[in-house]
Length: 292
Length: 279
Image 1: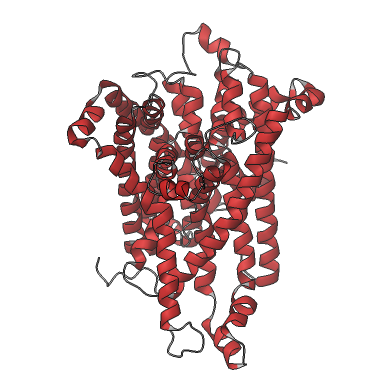
Image 2: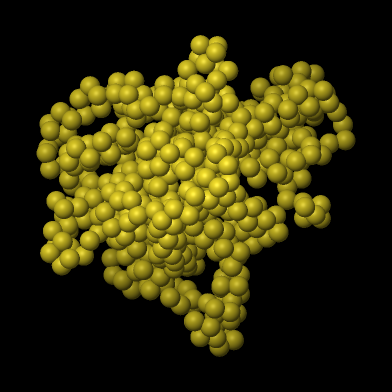
């Protein structure tokens, strides 16, 4: 990594009164690395170790299995539905909140954050209550032959719920910091609203938008609890990748479960790498504080 | 209120469209489903709800979930505060790599974390094996749930404390040292007090997340009723037993707990803005 893009310098001091001795410092660093190794690196290593424990052929067999491939397709499809929806509405919400003042605005921001405080299983349950066979709208959808629960629409809705805030909460503070000058200038110079949005707003927020979409996508592909409740776990039909991991694990196919899990671990690592690269290179164009 | 007065005075376009889209989106995806849960749980009346909540098995699960979530939150704050200190104060090879790795639990799907932790802490696992030889069982006990909740809570702790630590002025510590304080006194009397609001916020965030956590816990928990069964699992169990109303009652109790912790976060932040000038 190039040293020119220093992300956050630690505090530098030329006097020694306000610091530990070198030896204590080294011990503290060692303990911190040990804590993170224990909690973070060990589980990650265990996933890949277990995935390849029975050799590469067994790994490929688990990945190339029809049920796994179907789970990959469903996971990609669900993300392809939930992420764009939350991106479009996240941008709309950020525009309304960061650009205008209106009554109950802070209440609206709280509502947008709400899904992060709701248990994933409760999110899943809420769609069963609405669309299940005895749900409020379930009978109507059943009468019109539109399956929701135990089918793609339910899985996509539950995923949309849990990934709801990511884009909006990244964009709102960013757009508030950037202010309205650029956009007002564009309008004054005669740009139409859409032209202003596409040529001024969007380029200004593109890295923040990408950051939000990245986190939204990682959660959409990895969601377990919410999807577990609405999916019905029908092998090869309504199993997403995380659910397929559970089904294999429950069937004592540990090598298979960890092989599929390793795909999701790779997704997580790629997400972390891109996220970190964005934070290092485009720190100025992201919301200042990293929040989750 | 007339819409005219509601409509903000701004030269920028698109307010009405953006706000209506936002409200529709929140209404359909979040409020309608959660409203359905509240309505369904309420249809059996307060007494019916109480009959479900007071079932010993549910009470035991709620006690376990709330208790362990709180303990894991406190433990995460201590560990996370320490990690944040090392990351902001010391320069060492791989610091930025370690810093990036703190977010792993946010990125790693919970089911993957769940089976990985179980493999590690099972009696034949890398960590569980030696501990088992010492007579300490982790997987399939409440201790295993605690480990999973610390895994989930640690990044919340680090990321809420880290920015506050980065802003503290070293001059204060130097002044404290110059005035004759020992390093220990400086740490406990100068460095730690301003971190309290951030620590409380981190605790509330970690707690709210832990109470509802499902994927990373159910594999390592063993899910033995009255011993290692968590509240979110009972939502799923009741639903599988076709007791939808029962599931919604458990859900409402969990929702109230997370709203309460959100409320606490807001109180702490308002208090720290007043006292310390920052949130």
